[in-house]
Length: 185
Image (cartoon, rainbow, N blue to C red):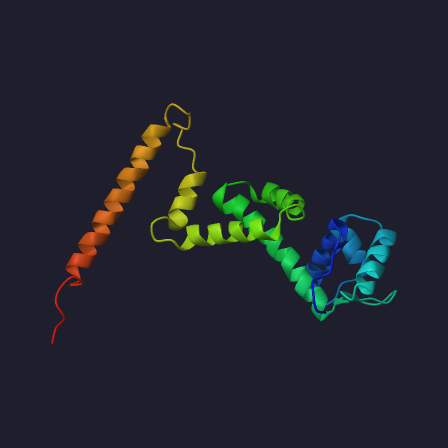
């Protein structure tokens, strides 16, 4: 399939459920989809027919359901959006995983691809940046007890002291390793 197919929120949810079931069991069955999404079997049948018409699933009544190549690509996009939002909520905002998963499910349909890309890039940056890294993310989720607007200056000062200490340690390590010396010949 050339371009992307327009899908309703509901059809995206079905595609995501099928993707996860296929990953777990190699195929999806109507009853498994109904159970995962907590919907009736007749709803599943209607959704499968719509997804089949769009060329995203291989579906015949009473047979196992699999994703087409286009279906896998579309499902991966939906899953990626969901996981990126959930990871942002859990890793950066320290939201409980169950709550984050539910919120991500609702948000994934309303978030534009451009905004989602920025969130993914931001989380990636925070995890990899040597100035911040996982410690910073973990620290952000920590509530110090001083977390009142009139006490934030104390937290900021403590963070700045830590950054200064780390920079000094890094500079000492670089000086000790001979990085600033002339080349040995």
